[in-house]
Length: 233
Image 1 (cartoon, helix red, strand yellow):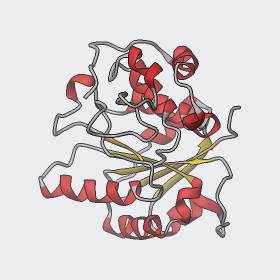
Image 2 (image 1 turned 180 degrees about the horizontal axis):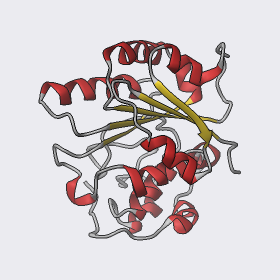
Image 3 (image 1 turned 90 degrees about the horizontal axis):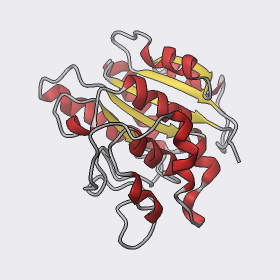
Image 4 (image 1 turned 30 degrees about the vertical axis):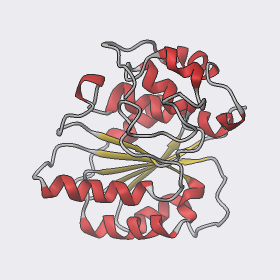
């Protein structure tokens, strides 16, 4: 895995600079920046995981299902001390640990290899079930998806299962940048609510609104937060 540092390297204001260190056709800048604020609030104020506890059984787990254009994710990991800033410039190169999709075997803090859209939420459901089987009820599992990912049938099954199963350790952040192909009656939030989830829809650039939605109580139900964004170009 990549080397870790012992303290956060920088703050939110430095994220654009960190992202600028990564270049290439596979950067997918607008798609990446649509996730930036939600990722920052999670890692800065919500997730109970640090570089030192990245392998601890009681850590919170974060799964990046929206694995295309992970430069925002890498920038946040660097800012929080999980990876060294120096590796960012090699993004996507042959000998770099930072691939065009994250690899859990190469990057400290990455929980799954992602990029194939639609599999992160089912994996998160399985993660919660695995934690419960081990008697671990404190760790929370977070998964970040894109609105277009919800077109995948695997996500429909995960949503339909998690609500009735009462998987309250499960949290989903849906980045809604209006890129989905298919519409849904009532919108994305209603889809989760109908399946028994606790749901909120907020401005995906508003850090206080994101934090409030991420930390709202939801006993006995999984939690979904729909973060509405317009991509930054």
